[in-house]
Amino acid sequence: MVAAAMNSPDHDKLPGHVAIVMDGNGRWARQRGLPRTEGHRRGIQAVRKVVAGCARRNIARLTLFAFSTENWSRPKAEISTLFKLFAAGIRDNLKEMGENGVQVKFVGQLDRFGAELGVQMRRMEEETAANSSLLLTVALNYSGRWDIVNAVQRLAASGCDCTQVTEQLFERELAVPPADLVIRTSGEMRLSNFLLWQSAYAELHFCPSLWPDFAEDDLDAALADYAGRERRYGGIGTAALPEQEQACG
Ligand code: FPP
Image (cartoon, rainbow, N blue to C red; front, side, top):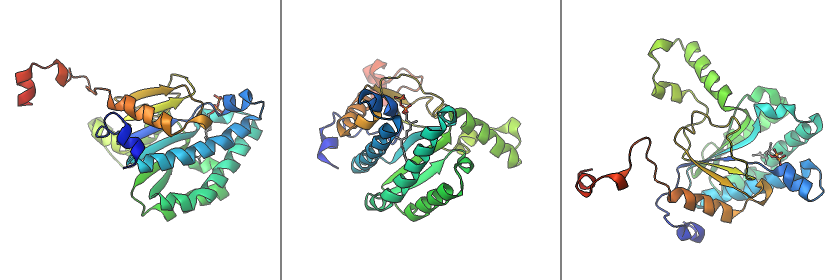
């Protein structure tokens, strides 16, 4: 484990699954008088750093919200640049993903991205399939509501008797498993249709940095915040129990 992780207050309390809403690319660019697309370009560099940082900190799973089903309402030129950046991001980072032991998966309604990007996504998935340090899931044309409806459709298509569905069975059909820590950058405090089911008991961390500025320090601050939380899952927590009951478990 790297020094940065050793410095965090409790490195035994690492989240298994970190998910990030990478917000603020546009504002980052505007503050500098640059086109929004320059913010996205710098956003890709932040992705590289965070992926490597999570791999070094022994985080098992990282899910990034790269394009939501609502993002189609953006200007066509911005969407087209974003797609070019996704393609370049895949092409330029394949080798580094391998070196960092990162397995990459894409989730969402991927059929709307065109054949060329589709081929690149599949290639990246195939070429990183044997890596096992960090599972990076990139959510593209994804929304939490879509994920839930898609899971229902998958269950129905499998011939399952939907009157017998349990939470566990349902969860298996989702594109992404529950998250432990959800980070959103740029100071906005909402989920914006990201992992709705999966955030039920996630710890939420809101960070003022705009995504292109998100650095290892911000990641460590989020991990330290998480380590200091008590996850009670609706219970009362160990601190509230009398000493004798705590000893009995
Ligand atoms: C939100 O900022 C950011 C996006 C909609 C795009 C995020 C995508 C990347 C950083 C590239 C990721 C690529 C890969 C391959 C993982 P915004 O444009 O909403 O910013 P604003 O709220 O300041 O306008």
